[in-house]
Structures are given as C-alpha cells and as structure tokens.
Length: 214
Ligand code: C5P
Image 1 (cartoon, helix red, strand yellow):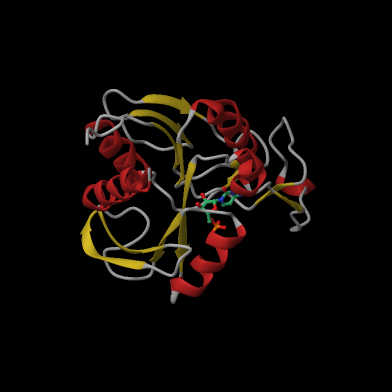
Image 2: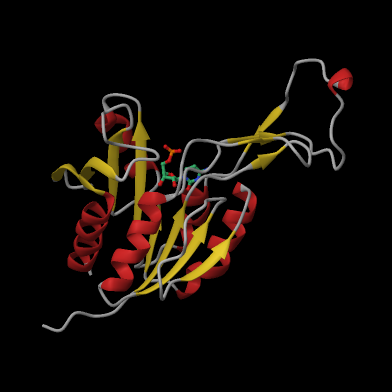
C-alpha cells in the first residue's frame, strides 16, 4: 500500500516568560528533538509546520517555521495551525509558570523585594484536546528518574495516542544532547524501548510509529 503524506504540526524548544525587557524564566530545552522530528517527517514525505520557541537551530529545509516566545504565543500558534494538521507532536518544553506581571521597563534592583509572583500557563495539550477529532496526538515526558509512571499518567490525562518518556538525568539523554534514550508508551499498555541513539534515529522511529497508527 502506498504511504499517505500527512500534515504534521510540531512544537519544539523552550518557551521564555518575560519579567521585563531583559529578564525571563525558561528551561534547558534546545529544540534538538523537535527539530529532528521536523526533519524526519519532511524526509518521509510529509508536510511540516514547526512552531519553535527561542532556539538557535536552523530550520530543516522544506519545513514551514513559526517562531514564538511565550507559552501563550505558542498556544495561539498551535490553535491557529491545528485545523490543518493530521498529527500534532508536542515536543516543546512549555514553561508551566509565567511572572504574574510584566514590566515594560527594566525593573530596578532597589524596587525588587526578592518575591516573584507567578501564574500558571495553560496546558496546550489539554486546551486543544476537544479539537483532537481523529488527529494523532503525541506528547513527551521528560522526567528526572523513573519516567514511566508519570508519563503514563500524562498520556491518559492529555488524551494522547502515545507518549515519549525519557529520564533526562541519564547520560546521553535529554536536553542539549545529540542522542536520546526513550520509551514509547501506548494507552493499550504496549511499550517500546529505544536504546541510546541519535535524536534523528529516535525521530525516524516516532514518525514511522505515527505512520503505522494512520
Ligand atoms: O510539562 P509536562 O511534563 O506536563 O509535558 C508533557 C507534555 O505536555 C509535553 O508533550 C508538553 O509539550 C506538553 N505540555 C503542554 N503545555 C504545557 C506543558 C506541557 O502542551 N503547558
């Protein structure tokens, strides 16, 4: 049977939550895994829109890229592009919290009291879950130690077709590395362990699992 081209929507990288024009909250995500997924999906003949937080990576050729900074901007870019997508891969490390207020001028040290009030960012996957329809949704769960139980909970809570779980404290896995070592968990209890290999190899495997779900 001939393989059917699909439209992939992928988020990658961190989000950055500004406090004032020079300060922000963020995390260690570099976007490498999400960009590898975008590359693998294009190589496999699919159409890709990549929504990227602030990263220093070049877009893979043939990918339509949308740059965002904050979680709220990422959410609105996802909502805008989802109607046209068959597959949504949520690879971004979305900041869970943002500063409660933004100062358009640099805050003075003397005016700060050491307390930073934060508010929760929306969970993008949970927000768009009602729009899932027959789209394939894939999530990631980066944990520090024993990723499976937490990842399974997130997969069910966020209504995913599968989740990619990894322990970011393992050597060669997680943020800023070119390799990763992950377990794919499925709602029917199936598990697939991908031993340490390049993020591109992991990405190819994820894309091929998605093709088989279709
Ligand atoms: O941060 P967490 O471990 O909950 O992330 C699990 C999945 O949920 C990831 O796929 C991530 O991209 C997604 N997520 C999201 N919106 C958030 C936080 C996480 O879509 N605010």
